[in-house]
Length: 170
Image 1 (tube, rainbow, N blue to C red):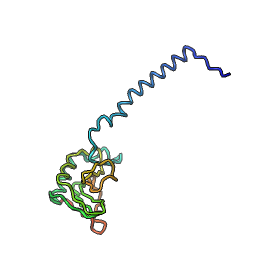
Image 2: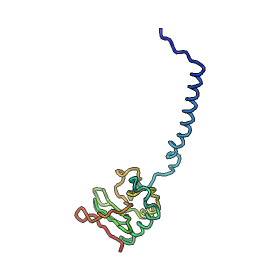
Image 3: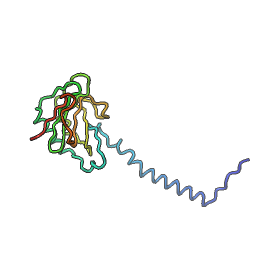
Image 4: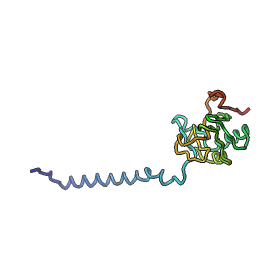
């Protein structure tokens, strides 16, 4: 026969206090856990990474608008068609904006897509991809024709046998 420990009045009060504390903690954490679900009205346009040291220096939306405008000045306003694995990149004032085709066939940018990209908030992203083919930026692997935005690195040069064209502001 198994004997159960006697529950004293102080043990019961201690357990009730612990239970009340846990309920209070869960109630205070629940809004934090659900806030991404409650505030997500539509999928984000940009899929970004932001290394912690750079996150505080993220370029932001105003810089995105400037970088997209520079890209349009350098490449023109008409939708661009890119060959497979081709990229066209503008580097200006330490920022880059570009278009990359990761598909196995040629792809054309949607009319108005660049404007939509420039209007979307990149948050604290320092290296971002956005779907230029009408898809969602749920993950980098979902995008075939992609806009690129972020902090420009010094190493941006033409690569892959000339398939990447980099134009810089004067």
